[in-house]
Length: 226
Image (tube, rainbow, N blue to C red; front, side):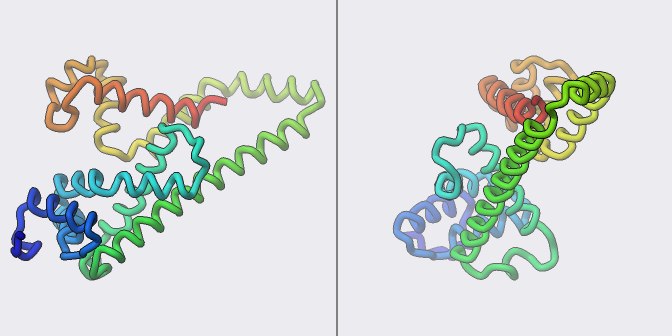
C-alpha cells in the first residue's frame, strides 16, 4: 500500500489511488487532491483526470434526471454544461477550492448540484420552446398575417441568421478544443490531417476532429434551424 500523503504523490499515483478509493468507498484524500490541483494549480492533466474518473457518474446523474431516450449528443452537451458550471464557480478566487470544500464528498455533492441545474435549465428551455410553438400554431391562422410575417422574415433572414450564428458561437463555444477545431476548420480551412499535424498534443487523431465537428454541427443545427 502506498502510504505517502496525497500531496506528496505524483498525478499518476493519485489517479491510481483515487480509482481504488472510489471502488472501496474509502476516502484517503487522493481524489480530493486531484480536484485541488486542477482548480488551484490550473493543472490541465489533473482536470483531464477528473473528467476521466467522474464522467460516467455525471452521465448517470443526467440519465437519472431526464428521460432515458435522450440522444447521446444531447447528453454530451449536458455533460459539458455541467463541467462548465462546476469550473466557473470553483475557479473563482477567493476563496480557494480547499477553503470551499474539505473532503471529496462535498465536492461530488456540488458536482451533482451542477448536473441537476444543467438538466433543469435544459428542461425549462425545452418547455419554453414547446409553449412558443404551441402559441404560434394556435394564434397565427390568418393567412394575411402569415404572409406579412413570412415577408418580413425573408427580408431579415440573412442578416438575422448571421447574427444568430455569431451569438450562438459567442455563447456556446466555450470549450478550448472546440474553439480551436472551429477556428482551424471553418476560418482557416484546414483539413483534419493538417489540424492533427499541428496540434497532436490537443487533438491526437483525425477521428477526434471529425467527432468534434459533428458535435458542433449537430448542436448548431438544433439551436439555429427551425
